[in-house]
Length: 356
Image (cartoon, rainbow, N blue to C red; front, side, top):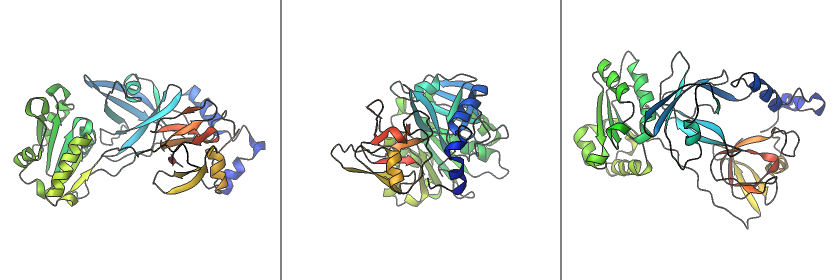
C-alpha cells in the first residue's frame, strides 16, 4: 500500500478520467467479460455435474493469471445480495497446455458462494485470485500416501494427474473416503489413471456402509504408511482423527495437511481501536472506533488507491479476508468471512485481515 512515484503521478486529479482504473475495467468488461487491466477474470467453458451435490467448473482465465501448481487453491468471487463474496477452492486438475482451471466443490444449500457458483453456465465470467498455497509433495522420490475424504479429493486429483504425466512416477497409494459410491467423484478418472499407471493403488472406503475410516483400517490397507510422505485433506473431524494418530505415532514430520479454517473473529463493541493485519498476518495499521479504513491507513502513513472518498467510484475497493466492518452508507455489518469492501465507507467492528 506504500505509494511509489509512478502511482502518485497517475493519481494526479487532472489526469482523471484517464487514471480511473475502475472505470477502464468496467468499460473493458462491457466489451468482453474477461478483459481487465488489473483483475484476474475467467470464462466458464464447461460445467459438469459430478454427482448429486458436487459440481465441476472448467474456467479459462485471462492473461493476468500467473498459473498454478498441482495442490494449490484460489479464491472465486461472486456477487451475493449486492456484495462481492469470495471463497477458496482447491484446483482439481493439473496444469495443462489448454490453460484451463477446474474447480470441483460440494454445493451447500445454506452456503453463500457454492449455490451461486453451481448456477453458473457456459459463457459466464467470474473473478479469481492468483493461485496460492503450498500443499503438495515435498520429496519427489519418496512414496506417497494420499488420505482424502469428501471434497478433500480435489487437490489429490490434481497431484495424481501431474504425477501420471511424468516419466518417472512416485509410488502412490490413495485412500479415499466417500459416503456412498455415487458420492465418490472422479471414479472414471481414477480408473483411467490406474489403467495407465498400474503401480498406483486406489482404495475407496464407503462410510455409509463401513463406518468412518479410522487409523486401524489405514494400517491394514497401507502397512508401510509410516515410510510414506502423507498428504491429508477432508472435513475437519476426518483430519483431526488422522492428525492425532500421526502425533501418537511420532510421525508429525511425515504429514502435510490442507484445510481452510477461517480466522476467529471477536466483535468488540466497546473497543476504541482495532488492529488491521495483512494477508500474511503482519500488522498493517490501526483504526479508531468509527474511523473509516481509508483515513486510518493514511493516518499511519500508507497511501491506498482511492478516488471520490464517498463510496461511489469503487477505486478503494479492497478484499477483506476476515473480520467485521460496518458500511457507513447502508449501516449494515458484513459477515466475518471474505468479502470485497470499500475502504472509504467501511469502519471496523473487530480486528481485520485485509488483502493489502
